[in-house]
Length: 231
Image 1 (cartoon, rainbow, N blue to C red):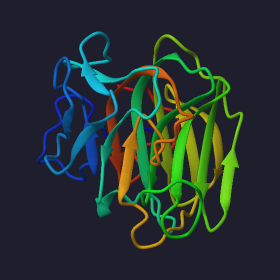
Image 2 (cartoon, one colour):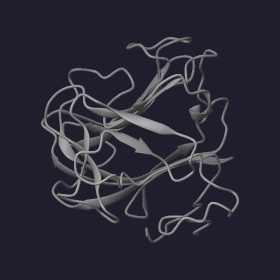
Image 3 (cartoon, rainbow, N blue to C red):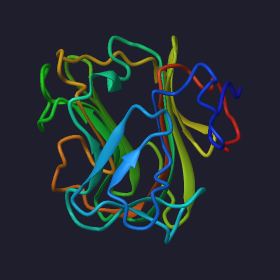
Image 4 (cartoon, rainbow, N blue to C red):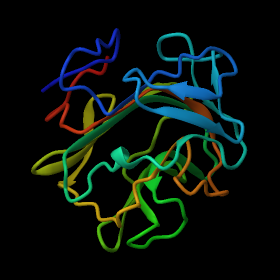
């Protein structure tokens, strides 16, 4: 069931609004990315830029070149702590992966350091490992969900991660490809302060991929409870 969408022509007066909605419509070569909500400003890390070469909608998209440590990043931001304590959330976005030899990371959240621990380590990251979608997250210990689905390269696809009161579900192009009981993420008080799009939150050097991300959205509520048609 489709619950709510602000994919095109997002009107700020509508409620509930997403926590974050990045269109990456800064044109060719942009390195500062301001969301439609007017609250968050992400910056380029490494060589990530907005690009008009390929996009799903609008003017441009976020381009990740095939070198290590590229992302759109926000630091010291406490309101991006999605899923802490089992809270509902939806993360959804469009992406086109040109190449992903080993590791690709679509996004990651942590307190600013690599590794897994309760105060500053990773909370969650989602991407591709050896051609298949992978999810890792922290509940007090690391949970690794591997070999979720072979991700198709070279074309645009919609991905959505939804945590509701009962289930956590991953959708590819609106179809459920993975489901488990809802996840309860654990963190220290500062752990949600770093959020990266295009890499893990620790900018791991092993993450090397090429592709585009468009219309990246984080919501603190459930957008879908079943299969849907992405817009």
